[in-house]
Image (cartoon, rainbow, N blue to C red):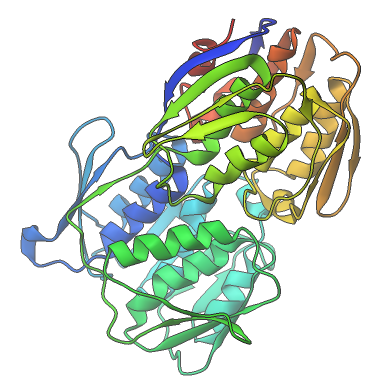
Length: 435
């Protein structure tokens, strides 16, 4: 197994330009492909698209479906819309471990009147999708499980769709299920109402979805009085905004902002600021609660260490589920115990992140308590040097634990290239701000 040893460091300072947001990139690619096509005039130019494994899986899938795609520059792409009528009605599509591609394509292809197989790596076949499939079946979608009930791979066949009754979907497993359903519903050309059952987790990711749908000409009506419902009208049709700029990834920003809070700073990230549509921008608020000194402008955010010491917090992390992982590492540098709550979604990500985080934090000396939907971290008096961190083929585990080196201890990261999923040059960028 490839390893990367990060030397002991004590300070972090500098400026980083963020890669594009993964969540925005893959949603934008799909919506651009679904936009109505009026000859060659209906295309979308996407600027600052994330260059990563996950976006590569989405691009490959769209090409397989017959979408016309042209790369204009490293991060600039031209997508010709199909109006939801993909040219290829028979396809076997491999999506790796890209949940932001697998979930929305499942819903979209359920309404695409074709025969499709969707599959991924073994871990993707362990990530539940039953709640989304159940919701799609309520309106007549023809979806079969090819191996284990409730999990990929999937076989999707043509179906007669009827959205006359409210579609019920659980909100407490993954917000990607609701996002996928909402993005696909305009393809039915019917009025549709989605009713969320239970608490909706990761709400900011739904806001990203609704914001982007609106940019592509489809409004979704929300009703939170009584039942939590979302309505899509029968006359909905995606249309291209001509050009979309993908803002910097707020989840990726968390590692550098945390470095500033731990290692003195300031560390500034460019490409994400006050106007960001991403929920993880509120990571800076959590850092402030721990005593760090954040600030932001329209296109940048930065963080510096407090004059004294960071302090532990007790935080409901529903609004920052991905960036909350970074707080688990910041907790190693804080006085007292940090409790991160409402993180059940960690269990169904690239790995079981609660279990993985608990195991690896103990390697560096932390006292850790884990529950079904929380993790509690008490830092050690002294971090354990030369720990070897397993990353579980999870990009966020690798990036999070790089921050441990700022405690003045070397640390070894197993399988460092797992960061290719969202941030291929992460370790080079990290090295540029630490000393």
